[in-house]
Image 1 (cartoon, rainbow, N blue to C red):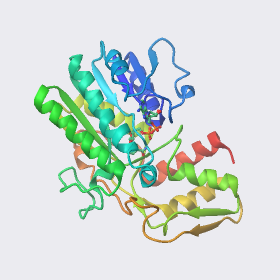
Image 2: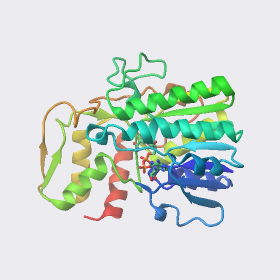
Image 3: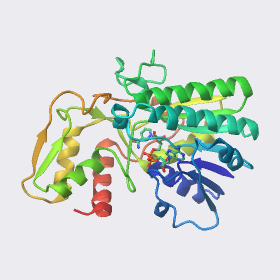
Length: 311
Ligand code: NAD
C-alpha cells in the first residue's frame, strides 16, 4: 500500500492516478485545505481516502500502518502567503514533515518520496542550477520550509535507515491546477476581460513541467534510483518568461484587444525569485525525458484550465 499525503491536491491527485494505473493500492491523507474530493471521485476501492491533518500526530500514526512508501506532497503551496502569515510554512512544511518521519519510524515504514522545490536555491548564481549548487540560501519562507524538510529527511535516513527520493520541482502545471501564474491570469481575465495585470515586469523566467511528466518522473526515479538518498531536479531544461505566458493566455482566450499591464519591478512579490532554471541532466541520465518543453506545456495547460474554469 502506498500513502500519498496531499493526495487530493493538484499534483497529488495526478500521482494517485499514475500509481493506480500501475496496479498499486493507494491510501490518501489530506485535510482538504486546498485539495478537492472531486479530483479523486473517479476512483473506487483501489483508493482509500482519509481526512487527516498532518499536524494531528496521533491520527497520522494510525494511517502509517501497512504502508510501503510515503509520497509526501502535502504542504502550503502558496509561496506568497509567507509574506502575510509567517508560521504557515513552518507548520504545514517543516513540522508536518517531522510528523511524517516520526510516524514512519514508529511504524517501521522506510521509504519516503518528497515534493521539494526549486525555491530552495534562492537567487542562485549558477544557471542552470544543478543539484550540487550551494550554499542553499532560499529567500522565501516556503523555500526555507522545503530545505528544512529535506534536511530532516536525510537526517532520519542517516540515523534510522531507509530510502529517500527528494524531487526538486520546477513550476508544475496542468489540469486540476488550483494556483499559480496561469490559474491567476485566467481568473483575472474572467473578471476583467480587456485588462490583464502582470505582477512584476514580466521578465521573470522559470521552467514549466507538465503535471503528467512530473508524476511519471517521480515514479521513474523511485523505480530506477537506488541510493539511500536520491536527490533530483525535476523540470524541462528550458524556461519561459511571464510575458510569454501572458501572451499565450491572451491568444488562447480568443478575446480581442486585451491590455497587458505590468506592475513593474523584477519580482512579482517579496520572496519571488525572478529567474529559476534547473539543470535536469541528472534526471535525463536516468533515461527519463519530459514529453514537452516549457512553452508547449504552458499552452496545453492554458487550454485545459480555460476549459475547466471557463471564460
Ligand atoms: P496543492 O495545494 O494542490 O496540494 C497540497 C495538498 O496538501 C492539498 O490537497 C491540501 O489540501 C493538502 N494539505 C495541505 N496541508 C495539509 C495538512 N496539514 N495536512 C493534510 N493535508 C494538507 O498543491 P500542489 O501544487 O499539488 O503541490 C503539491 C506539492 O508539490 C507541495 O508540497 C508543493 O509545495 C510542491 N511543489 C509544487 C509546485 C507547483 O508548481 N505546483 C512546485 C514545487 C513544489
